Length: 335
Image (cartoon, rainbow, N blue to C red; front, side, top):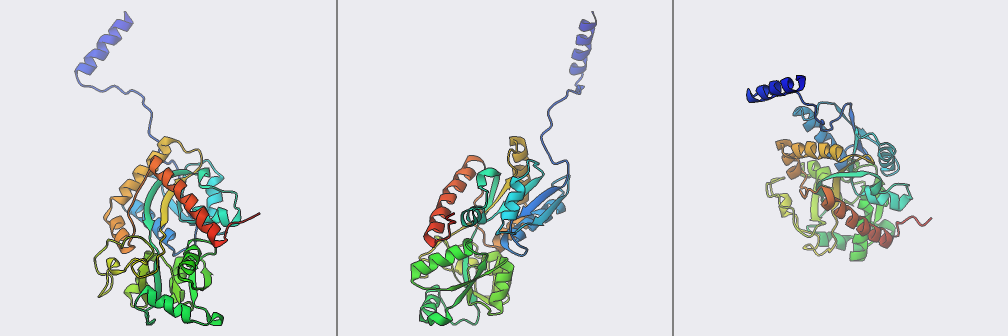
């Protein structure tokens, strides 16, 4: 009798359009501060991107819990990767660069990208061959001719971030392609690399666009070519006379070398699909903002974005690419 009465009451409520409070599974979201790890120093491309993302999230109230950006660049980023690998707490994400591959290969660090959970490729970062604005070279080919004519005891200095990482890999590839030899000088981050070139402590760099754009705009540096198979698409003037699109590819400039770098997000091992989805959705909201779009153009990024299997497949392919480049350069740890 009671059962029939309850059934009639329920039907009456539903007929009246009154919703019943029925428990349902809540989608995952952070319940405490999210640590955003940067496996590099301050001022470089990864650091700038992480801090921009953090700023956009805060400005637009995209996350209920706070976020804090933490630089852990020790051991060419090993400190950051091992930190994220060592926990299953999903309140931690990490932004990657090519040290995702190069650090374990060069140092034998007990880490592989498969130890983490891929979230999303945000973009691909370019590399540009930069010289000081006072350098008379008008093209990359001109500069390579300078390098060839420089005596061995006074080699041109190429500044870059870290040792046996992407900047030095590009330098070695450039040497092999052109028959030149540089003295490679490592620094802690791309911001410092650009400053060293402005001060003429090095002769050239292969910095990312975002790491040198301020000095280019100020008239201190000069771009010679971009290490990609296509010109950057951005046609708005950065200086009075040039846009990113005006910079030729290195192949166009007679220096057939190309290389792009991942800017992607991972989280901790064992993260659930719901946890990954939360971060994917959050990053999609970030990428839809005017601030992100302005940053992409200012830094001349390739805006390719991938998730899921496409992202994993891209990572696996580029791990093999880096294995080949590192082996050719003699940078693989052999014991």
